[in-house]
Image (cartoon, rainbow, N blue to C red):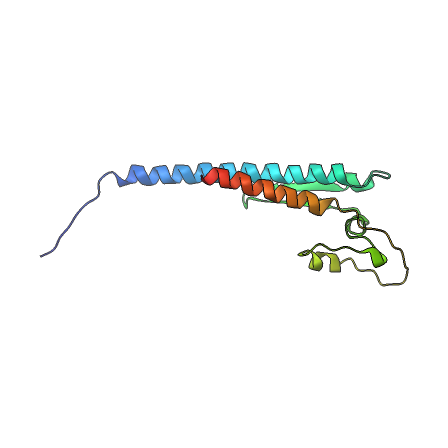
Length: 138
């Protein structure tokens, strides 16, 4: 004996799931884009001011296709201001690999204290993004 059953009306339900997925992706993308802009704005605001070249070098990019964004600091002295130099280097946990790319050759001894502007902005932005995304799925 073979039992057969049919579920009627499933296509409209599946269509609703597709609609929810598209809306969630759109909302998540907006949250990521807002966060990228927020991080860039806060990094510019908090960057030490001298001639303004550091602030002017900070920019952001967002890709809606990948739902990802980046904040870039293009001034060559940016990492040295972020992490410090000489014996006053401060590298926050989790950023060691990034900081290692900017080690000097040890020829000169210039001790400048770290004046972080990007990492605090990024940490705050990620905290805010997490809260936004949690609100979206609730």
